[in-house]
Image (cartoon, rainbow, N blue to C red; front, side, top):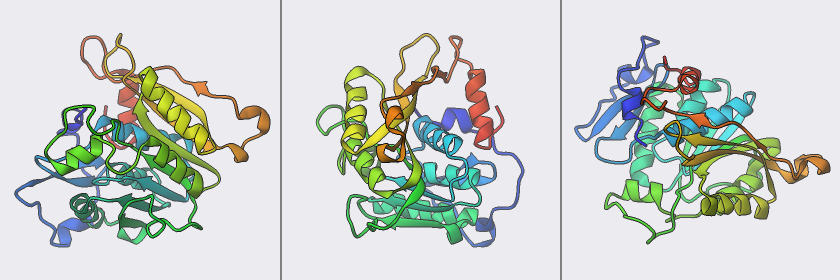
Length: 280
C-alpha cells in the first residue's frame, strides 16, 4: 500500500535539515518526502515508494526494542525503515544493506540530507554475502521487509526497484531469518513484516524455526476494518537466548487496524503515526 495518501502534507516545522546547506537538490525524477519528524526521504517519482508495511516494521521493531544501541536493516531499499529507526533511536548506530545501486544512491542522499551519516552506514550488496556482513558483527535490533512472492507467481513490474521489492530475486523470508539469527546480539530482537494468509504465514514460521528463532510476538494488520489481515508483524528472538519453557510461546496481539469501515484513519494507527513523528 502506498504511503503517499497517508503522509502527504504532514510535515511540521522542525530543525533545518543539514541537506539544505549541503547543496543537495531534488532531481526531476525524484521527490523529497516527509518520513519522521523533520527527516525527509528521497524517492524516485515513478519507482518504488515507501509503504505502510515499511513504516509498521520500523515502528514495531523500535517499540519492542527501544533501548537498542546498534541496529541493522536487511534489504533496506531506499532507506525507509532505517531512517525511521534512526529518528526513533537517536543514540543508535545503524547499518543498512541493499543490493540495488539506484536505491543505495537515494538512501545515501537521504542520510546526508538528514545529517545522520556519522552513525548511519549504508552498504551496497547482498546481505547473504560474507563480504557484506562479517561473521562477528552483532546488533541489538534487526529489521527487514522481505519481498513476498517467488518469481513467476504474480504480475511482475518492469521497473527494477518495484520488481525486487515484491519478488524474491535475492533471498526469501527464510534468508532474512537466517541472517538475523547469525547477527543478533545476545537478547536481540528481529522485527519483520510478511503476508498473513495461511500459506505465507507457514513460510515465515518455518523460516524462523529453521534459523533457530522463536516468534515471541506477532500482530495481524487489517487494512480496512472488518476485512481479513493481509500482513502480520513478527517479533523474533534467538531460541538460545530464551528460557527453555518459553521457546514454544508466541503472543498474538490484537489486530492493528489501519482504516475504519468508513475509510477514516483508525485511532490506533493515528497513535502509530504520532510515534514515528507525524500528527494523526
